[in-house]
Length: 288
Image 1 (cartoon, rainbow, N blue to C red):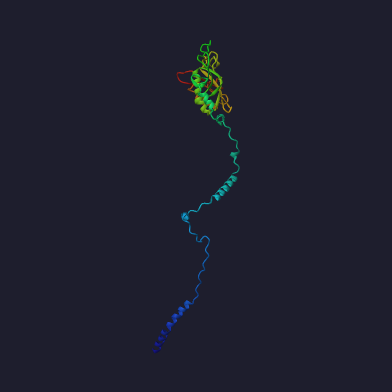
Image 2 (cartoon, rainbow, N blue to C red):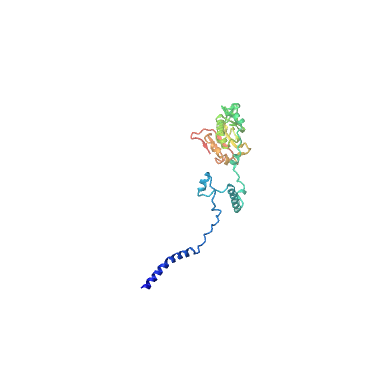
């Protein structure tokens, strides 16, 4: 028993020396060296403090726009590539469509003539009490043919500044209707470019459509005038025979201003002119 007790005492005396030795061994154990600091990348490099005006821009998640010069160059390159891929522009090489007669007539409107306006408004040379109707009074026309003749007639040379190719011998009612038609229908339709009316017929004592045995024509009473064409300021002549498509509107516009309007397609006798007369009808205008 004494021997066991001595062993215990020996062990207890050696323990305090063993603990410091273990700690010393831990302190002397190899420790991995510290990780060297990596050089900062350019993107991560700290930026200079932004100015006050740039703070909102830098804090925005949207990317900054491209410079204008670069954007323009990119757009030009894209357009050139697209044009090259598409090939030549076929529409650019096609001839322009030929305009119809009405478009040709209205292609280059000329300014209104002040001289024409002065002449139209002047009383000098006017007849029928309307300044725009120019002409002269004529003596009474008598005829042996019953129904023919003209009393208080005039020879009209122009209406609303538009000359007649020949003086039209008619009565004042017909002269006023012709003036109204030119002023309100013909000139607006052609932008005041009509300078002359080609008169095919006016007063003449004959039967209707020169048919033997027919009633006396309104021409024999001085109540009718036939228009074969319009002449424009650019020199173009629009004839009823060849350019009726361009004149269809003014033909239609004469209905009501005149008692009778006849033209191509009406009765076969007026394919090359417009017949306009002031014969009254109880049922209203006769327009064909």
